[in-house]
Length: 382
Length: 257
Ligand SMILES: Cc1cc2nc3c(=O)[nH]c(=O)nc-3n(C[C@H](O)[C@H](O)[C@H](O)COP(=O)(O)OP(=O)(O)OC[C@H]3O[C@@H](n4cnc5c(N)ncnc54)[C@H](O)[C@@H]3O)c2cc1C
Ligand SMILES: Cc1cc2nc3c(=O)[nH]c(=O)nc-3n(C[C@H](O)[C@H](O)[C@H](O)COP(=O)(O)OP(=O)(O)OC[C@H]3O[C@@H](n4cnc5c(N)ncnc54)[C@H](O)[C@@H]3O)c2cc1C
Image (cartoon, rainbow over all chains, first blue to last red; front, side, top):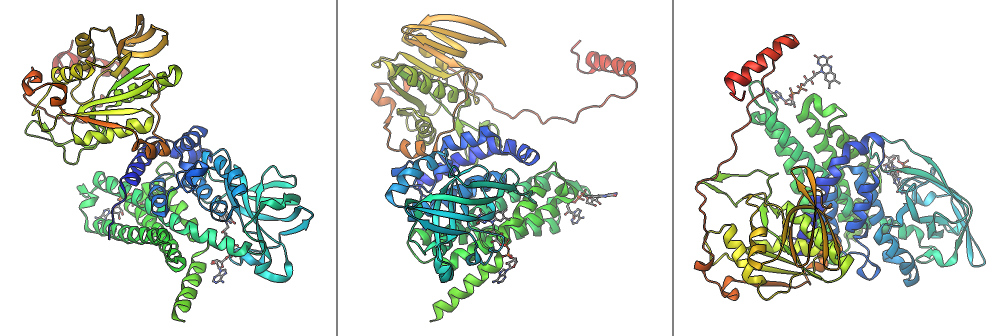
């Protein structure tokens, strides 16, 4: 067993850490206030190659394996989660479908521009009637000659506003249920593609989730992603692939909160001593540290298993579930350690507290993760 | 154009620094490229991109300096040279470094050598100018702009906040000041490529030098941290009372008036 990162990954990670510290942290408050990520940071991130993490080298990407991706995601988790989500959704669910399932022609057309960040990727599965039960979608795709005509809508779609390339699931054969769903690569410039309302969210400011409407939207048949009728399975695969990465981002955010807590508890004095000298505070710090250690081991184990080609359905769901629980718990303790200032908007702690909450909901709720884990346990018994 | 950058590894002064027995402890310190040398690397890359040629980054340091050289390669430099003095030299000063570099540059045809205006650790600001003297080429320090047309060079130089414009010619050595450019972050693909770029390692022996040739001319007696900042004093009363008190403090306590 070897718990070290390769020299390359270690070097990448240190450089990302430096960039995050010096540039992104400096504008975190601005992102929160303006609900907008400064263009300069987005451009710098593109120039650094942060939009290309998982895209193969032959298409201009970094071609990192899952351990490498997670190491970078962890660093990106150490700053404003809206910024992290822009990159995470693009390099994760927004592009993984094309990387894993795309034809050579699709990869050549889309991946180089996605690697450079010129085209931002997004993933559109959820609909008002199809949340946890994604197979219940109403969006239809009807084949007409060498085109599909798509009608329907999606909501809560991350990167919908900045997105250029969407992985969209739609029903091609209503008689077959989940087996009648197909995935498509949709460009925002396709006629009939309409951006709807942008949601006002509890957190993740700077990252925009919105509705999409498709009105007789024409999609060329060559933009079918994977096989017809495999869209539901594809969507589940893409989501499963993203879970370790999400755990890594939660790990990074939890570590950053621990740093804030240690700094604050060392400085803040009450009853004539720094509060870090009080056992109640020490125990909270120990609790945070314990959770981080467990999550770290879990995250990189799942990433390593993925790179070994092992089945990770159960373990990735465990990492997603546990990662979101750790982050929420750590954020709660961090507010507690900070006392009143932990509740105030001009201090970063309450932002993490709000941003942590979504991680139990998107990319499969905690309940759905538990269903997946239990199903896998039953499967393993057979 | 043959462009060289002089680069030094320093500890990160933004991080905690521990001093014991008149020396800075290496353990626990974070090491970085001297920030002024980052301007030099950035400028070298920009000049190469504009005029063609090659950028070689040279450091006099130890085995760990490889990391800073790799960072410069990841930013876009073409080659790196580590002159490793770890096993040969106990102590060195600006003279030592400049003497070693002189030997290194002896058989090179450098058109442009860039260094930092000063290293944030020992802050001598001497290595660049000394090297230029030894090599017999012109030098300009604290530059904030560099324009090269053929052999002719026009430089803006920071003079305590004012700007001086200097005309000179290649070959040339310059030292870089804040404001010259905004150093890039190494791109992740650049980092992956950096490990394939050549990094040559030399010892002073390879430069036909021995310890005595480069023995330090100065000795550092002690190093200590600045005293901790004391709490400020808030003056009270109306404006005229405050002014009176301030003047009295400046005269009697601080003795600056
Ligand atoms: C900020 C944000 C960003 C998002 N980004 C995207 C995106 O980029 N792309 C995309 O396609 N979607 C996205 N989503 C949608 C997200 O994946 C869904 O919100 C999520 O899957 C839950 O669906 P729902 O909101 O319809 O809740 P529902 O499915 O209605 O769930 C309500 C509650 O019922 C529980 N529940 C439902 N079914 C079961 C069950 N079988 N067993 C036990 N409990 C159950 C859930 O766990 C939950 O507690 C995003 C959502 C948000 C809030
Ligand atoms: C929205 C809001 C409204 C408020 N309204 C009012 C108001 O109307 N009037 C008013 O007077 N105040 C008000 N407060 C102040 C509030 O009562 C204090 O924030 C609270 O008492 C905590 O004090 P503190 O923020 O200074 O944190 P600290 O006292 O610095 O606490 C920091 C951490 O150290 C822990 N700690 C401190 N001492 C010990 C110890 N001896 N043993 C173990 N742990 C310890 C705390 O439990 C906490 O986890 C308000 C605060 C907020 C955020």
